[in-house]
Image: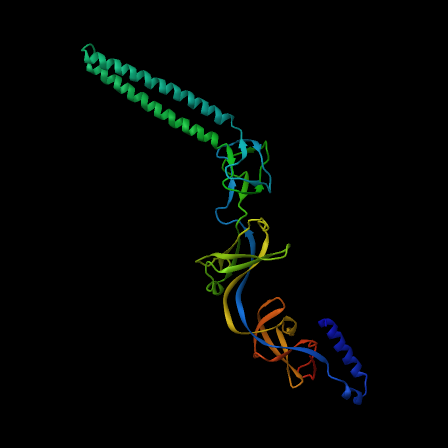
Length: 357
């Protein structure tokens, strides 16, 4: 029977009883209730957390070109999936390309100068060996050759820098991920490293970050199992506790914990508010009752109605966990006790009842 229907039936019976004569009221049968037996149980300890889903550290990157210029190419938008190394945007390469061409020309000139200096020094060495030229001429040619080689080395370094400059005009995906933000549009001018043009995040795995009181953090350690649930599609996701901060946050007095969950199919979305429960060690000494046996108290707590010798007695309890219609509780009960599971709403303490099997 629906608890609300049972409550209305009980209220109607009370009103009807008030309209009867004393003899009729004395003869009114007690309300009927269904009962169950309290069973021993084991409570799965846990700590509930709420936070936002985000990419792990180092897996969410803001990208910006290292050189200023006009954004001539923007190939992606928010939500696009990208592969590592893929070119996502490009700044005007004209100035960088011109520098590269100039560096290449300079290197060609320097290489030619080295070759000419080497040949001149070789001819002088031959003349010195035949006594036609002075040794001083050979030493001067060697110095000129060394200077030409140094110039060539500087030209090669300039060419490397110019090539890197061309590479700095493009933005490449650092890893497989999804574009989560784009702050510029094609054709706009960017100033360089700051501000960023776009952001790439890795959606697998995802982390839930939350702060817990310091006394609760003492029971947490990396590797503990965790269960995540989000609004929307039904079901839960299993993961683990990735890390517990060794320090207390100065602003809120809590300890930061990071829970990590695999997301290979992309069912979890970045930035979603989610709830998680870290599973702690199981504890014995608890009892199991049907969830329908739980009754609300005026102070906001819960209780069950224990049946002894045809009368009900309210027993406050504390719920440790609840799943699949069964609640694990603690209270002044013992295994084997009889409790009301249907028809117990609004019954006063010590009321007489008729047990329906």
